[in-house]
Image 1: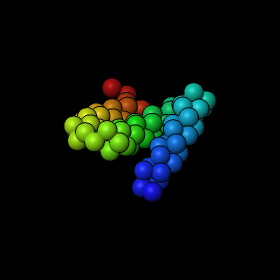
Image 2: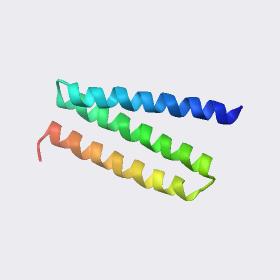
Image 3: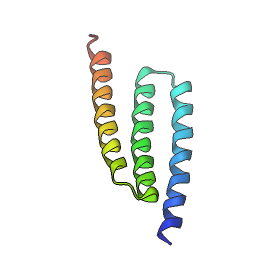
Length: 86
């Protein structure tokens, strides 16, 4: 039962990535693109967590953590660039 729920969650995450890629391409403003990029990375971290669960490998959670930290730093740098210009 839990695996079925996780599979449905994975499908919904893939659907979220598709919508986010659409907003990234179509976004009329740079802030829309930055938010879309952030959404894609958050969903990617969640997908890595699902893969870690299904594969039974805890090391993937470390990879997800590092990826989330790099994603956070990149969004902060882009936000500072938009706000002030480096």
